[in-house]
Length: 447
Image (cartoon, rainbow, N blue to C red; front, side, top):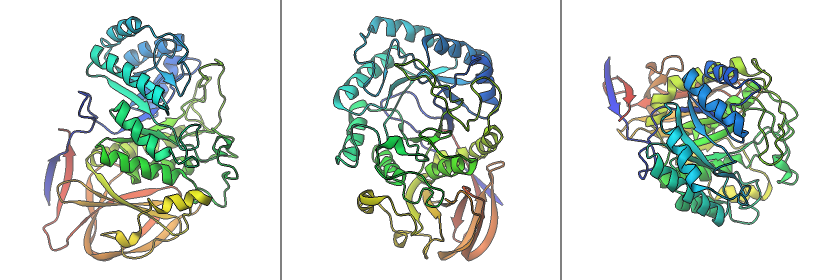
């Protein structure tokens, strides 16, 4: 069978030298009691990028040296010197010469590849300070990744309740001009108690979650500003979750990919995050690693899904999302559902699918810019297996993109129905081709 290699377009903000070379598999905080052991185990779990969000000064610099020794990339943050978390640290005098000195040191480190400039800026003064520090660090280290993340809609500041979320999200992009568009959302629990009445239940799962609204806005802005979309998913107990099983984590990871994500960021690796002001750890359950050392409840499953993402990664980096469609049982909570209607894409607009989707099923459509079309199908259910027949708008040759090796293999040569069998929280990536054309497989390479 004919095999074609395409060179995909560069990913990243055009004002930066930094460009994304591989699908990012990161975590907000890589610090445990034994920093080097934690970083070694994080690499074993399949992470290819680490962060030291909210780390204490001593632990941050331990992480820098450990990443050099272990051989894994790091995004640096030291809140005693630079950057901030939401509105915190604006009271701290900023020593710009000290920032320059530190950037000079870190520029020589092979595996410190970037700086965590600001965690969740959400208002004008925070945008201005984040941009000022980003510009200084870019001057000092032109090839660095100058990372920041925008908050979810349930944090104080811009929300759907005050009508500012979408507006401020776009203003953040305009003002800070980040190299990637990253956002976070941790929906299993009680949403920081900021959505009155909205609490996770096993019966409703995420059918009513505003996560879908937030993620749609992020996807749209990433497309508009030509930025790679990264997503922080909930990888542990955050807001008093009653329990966590890994299919919950898996579903959130694949949901982000469904919306075109080029990076997945775990919150958080060990549950040993330190709140910036109090300096005490925020204990969490159901983690990949234990803060005291060793492998947590989710380690083996995280290894497996990271291997899948690495196999799919070269293809995912080349794809642009053109639409996301959900089964009718997805009804965003309360008045937020009315807002979602203005963003929601109807399956009648799909170019590939012709019938309503089965219960808790979602589909994402993609193109690679070379005329090839892809389809991802997601089982949103955390507990039930999905077996269904999807109707297609026409006959297609269908290739599955393997989650073992990333290669494309024909699974149906000429069909207008697509049989789907997916475990809870699982997904499949397919390429659809006109059956009258000569069959061919595809791979993508970096520019």
